[in-house]
Image 1: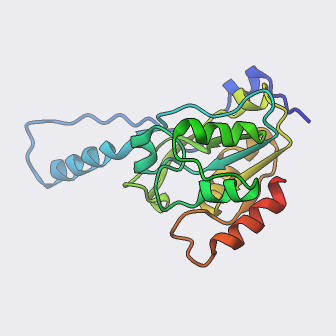
Image 2 (image 1 turned 60 degrees about the horizontal axis):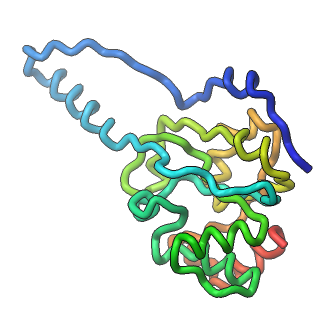
Image 3 (image 1 turned 120 degrees about the vertical axis):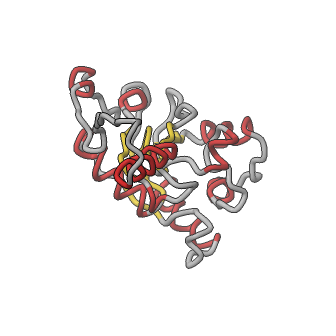
Amino acid sequence: MGVFMGKKKVEHVVFDGMRKIKKSININQYNTQNENRTVKRTAKSNVQKHPFPPLYDENSRVLILGSFPSVKSREMMFFYGHPQNRFWKVIAGIFDEEIPISIDEKKQLILGNHLALWDVIAECEIVGSSDASIKNARANDLSKILNHAPIQKIIVNGKTAERLYIKYIEPVTGIKAVVLPSTSPANAAWSLDRLVDAWEAEIK
């Protein structure tokens, strides 16, 4: 079941998180008000853009979305780069394959099992890898995947990804996503075996 979105519709979407604010600053005023403005400008250094493209091909049937890449993922330029994130162990467990090590192996695991990977957020202010700190977000345009792959289901990895998806993407696509327990090490309540069982029920 392919999902098609007209380009005109997507291009005219305005996301809540996109706002441009222009302020005039008098550099000759060194008072408390000016210091507060300096703090605000410094905070903007936390703005991050998604640094790598989605992973999919013409056979991808299930699209898995995270929230936004962690610091490790941004450094590696690929999905789920933190060594303690259990995503790659979960996917390998579902399909009874070896846990991939290299990026090429990870790509083969995803594409070879008709999956696709991307994230909800294209750009945001974020502190480190903290999903809870995400603000002023701009969503990724999923049409590039949905128009070129026979996506039958969208899965979001964890509650934060679900919240962001519902806010930014579901109003555009009209597609409800299935939320699965996060593979993050912060989700310690879920063992690896439980994660594999929960994810397998939706992916296979």
